[in-house]
Length: 422
Ligand code: PLP
Image 1: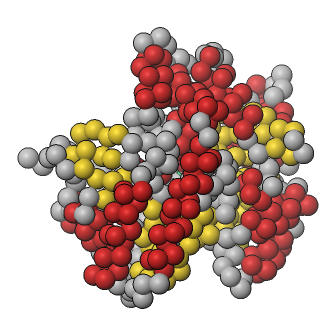
Image 2: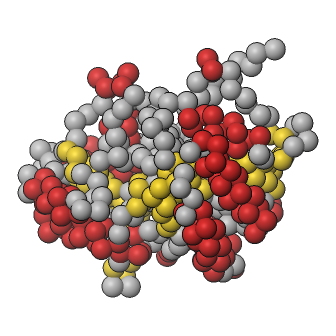
């Protein structure tokens, strides 16, 4: 019987396998047919501590039996208050002082980005400079699939149909080795034209190909924005929650953004929730006795109480466990194995940032429409792995609880994939 389910980023016409997963624990997914898969990409980069983390699962169960959902326009609940305070406590700081002082909830990385863009334009509008509405972006970026988030991301076959809906942005080149100065010069020139904001993925561009750039460049980009009074939006949706080795990637550059969307690992990966953190001036530009200036954004499930309880449990885990030490151990374990794989002639451009590692298969068959990535995905699935290459880029982003033998299994498969597909 054919399923009525329409899957995201999936070509149903190609009849690729869609394995049903019955349960999950730690880094393992258990299929209904009895097989297991090692979740090498944290189920789209969300699962941090491991699947069905008992403290998070218990918090969800407690909250579901206490207060499930509440209209959030002018009402509040303890989990939302607790998580907001917790986020402010751990967010990047300026001279030890929190600059990010306000938290707006939503339910996905894309909507957290939409909120960030709306906050930026709302700020300029409300302080009497509505002409400052242009957004600057970095080439190869990905910020989500809603209309605004797509507008500030790379354009290509994956959003061609919606071009008429997307707004115009200013694009600065990715600071690849050799073009760092070109990137900074382009940003400086674009900032001089008084745009509203610059949005960037800090230190690593994810869906654009796991492209890494150094912290000093992020610092210089933030400084350029600051000099020109352009709002600096750091999209920590993927990089947050320890992925790059620090809790947030911005910390490595000593940068404090004006607006910071976070999502994915905010609940440890158990439930959809997102937050957009904003500085006091952004909030104050909307706070007034004038109803016309309020922040006109919401969705039915804004700050869902069960999701907030999961996020509170996640924050407690970050306080109780030495998660960063676990990530450092994992990063070392990945680095050791990457070093061995890097010598393989089928691969190029090995790169790693914290617990994220990527390598490119040397092949001509690498375009977005090539069937290389789906063939690799199916082959990895047969090997008991959930990996989802981006074109010819194979990357791993495992849950932090993954074990050494599971990592070995992943790297043995990467090696063999080089032999077969390289
Ligand atoms: N921003 C970045 C940097 C991302 O990597 C993603 C998702 O991968 C998003 C935004 C969108 O998040 P979501 O898929 O939760 O809408």
